Length: 317
Image (tube, rainbow, N blue to C red; front, side):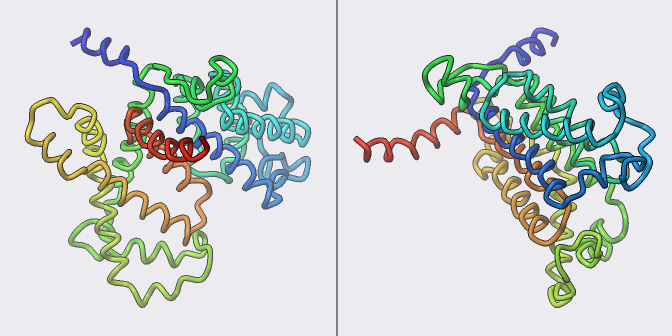
């Protein structure tokens, strides 16, 4: 059993999938920070009340504490560093050091005020730590171009960070579903949870009283969402089945025949697009969907992208 564990942790794969994840998480870092900048709330949310912030920030993350506290100079300096790490992640500059610095800097900013943030902040920090473990900077990056002369070299890296990220995704959904035990969510109850959520001004992007005309559809969406989340632990198994199609087992064959990993992904994509279009929940949807890039195995990404680039290359010759 120990040998199998060592072999699993030592397995390698092409870096393409983890590189795409790196680019997406870098974009989410920029989204998270620029959303606050665009709203004009940097000083309001992240600066101590003594310097004009919304409330006293007495419990600082360690980095802000050692830099001198949540004053404008420290916060604005960290903001610029955080934005730089987001750009560097997208471009693939700095290797593992870039996500590590981003983890410390962005984590300190979003955690400095406990009244301004959400669980998506923890999800972003988890993703950045996974990028520290990942070798996704070795392709689709400036570093790859400088090192090999190619933007997209085929480089083997450790596979386990991708599987950890997929487990993070399924754990997030599964744990969320298991906590939804009210009569508004569970089958046999009212299935009215999504309708009531859409009527809360805290979350609305705009007035949504019109949803009342489609109440039965919101009940169906509530029912599907609950089951989809509760069964999310099975999702990572469908991805594993797709990676090992030659192994025996009826469940594996059934899952691969029905393409269940993409059925799960389709439901999740529809859910997040609906959330993003109707509710203001920060970077939650784009951040969650960044993990979906890892559902396709690296050889699949290379095959799909090669098919798309080959006709364009032929047309240019």
